[in-house]
Image 1 (cartoon, rainbow, N blue to C red):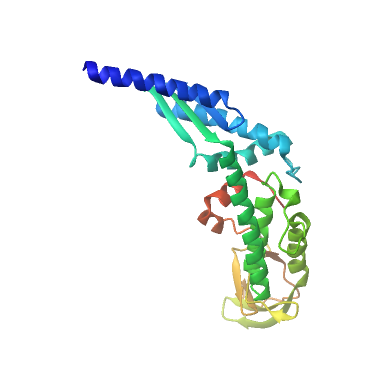
Image 2: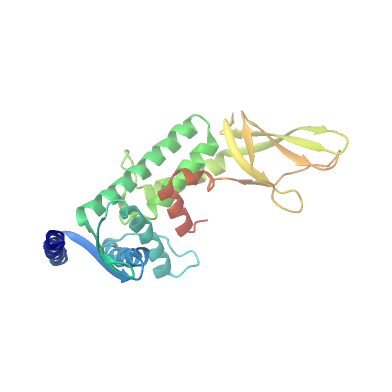
Amino acid sequence: MAWVFLCVFLFGICRGQSIQDIKNDAKTYFWGEGSGSSLKKADNEALDMLSSQIAVQVESRSELFDLDTGKEFKQQFKSIINTYSNATIKTTERIVIGNEPDVKVFRYIKRSETEKIFAERKEKIIEFSKNGTKAIDALQAADALKYYYWALLLLKSHPDGSAIKNDGGELLATWLPAQLNGIFSSVSVLLGDLKSEENYAAQILQISYKDKPVSNLDYSYWNGKDWSNIVSAKDGLGVVEFNEPHPVVKEVRLKIEYEFEGESAVDKELQDVMQKIDMV
């Protein structure tokens, strides 16, 4: 037992010195510490403190733009920063001191690691932008809108967002909205055949992009009472359904889908940002 006690005691001293060294080296590390009756509570407190340090750094260099969407700027800024804080959890080191119900946690991460997180998000923004261009070249309007919108969403969460450029040297802050608006303005819809049955009718839609049938496009339509569920047009053809056999259809109101919030669940980082930023 004396030997075990001696090891623990020496380890505690070494660990204490290491923590103090990290605290003193503010140019190299972000850190946070917390205490509580449970490990989870202490850990969350430490992560909150670490996140606050990251937020101060990002705010001092931030070029986050167009955040005034009905929320207070500070509130939304903090939410956006937390999307980075969540990402850092995977790369932070943790030291646990003591045991429940009196446990302390020390979390730390090198500043260079947070720069890697910013760089990874930038790479994802550019990748989504390229995916959008590939999609619209293939007349896949739904996919193009999705990737362009996702790229713009992540761009608005990046501290250097207003300075990021595509391979052509164009600022994505202006280029991405132009691509989205270009697709919306270049989609045309014509009324095709009306197929009727006893208590049902389907109005066929001919949907094109720059006078070519779209490979895909997702939309909902106004049924007179509410917006329908999402409908997917394929190979230039869509449909609007009616619960009556012979409706008089002169025009249809469509709302084109571009957020694809459900699909964002495949990317936790993207989903987190989508929940923090409001965009029209």
